[in-house]
Image 1 (tube, rainbow, N blue to C red):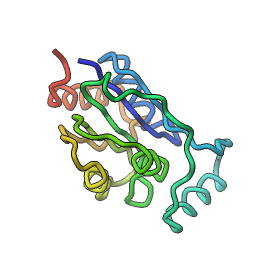
Image 2: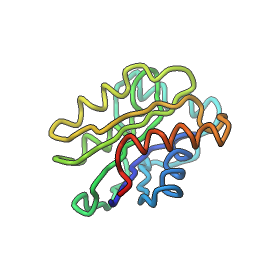
Image 3: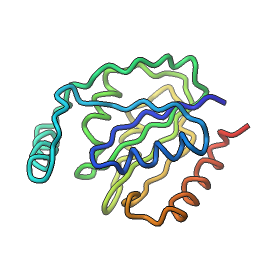
Image 4: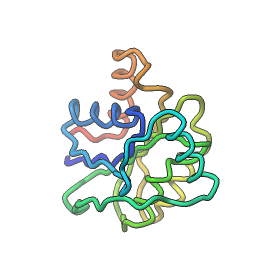
Length: 161
């Protein structure tokens, strides 16, 4: 079974999950990148994220060259920003036609996933959502504990043949 993981990661937490899925399950990774991809740190990063959330604007992203027909399963992952999916993920979903695919969702967060999974599901009509998971602070989680969480989730998705 061929798996694509499409993710956005600002601080590396969502990337950590994507890399695990690649390493353990042979997935192809596609990183969502913001067009104006300057490095944002500290207060500048917070202001940038907050301004996108307040204005409810999605940043321009670089095109991702993916042929969805090549994949049996798509996994979408992103961080939680203010109880919502990260705005770059919303940019990707709004600019990309995904239809009739098996999709799994993950969210990384520092406190609560809120209704991020439900929001993502609502933006993906015409697809089969096979499962979801939210993980608190993956980079701060014990690696063996994180592996166990993700292995259990992946096995529930029935991706491995």
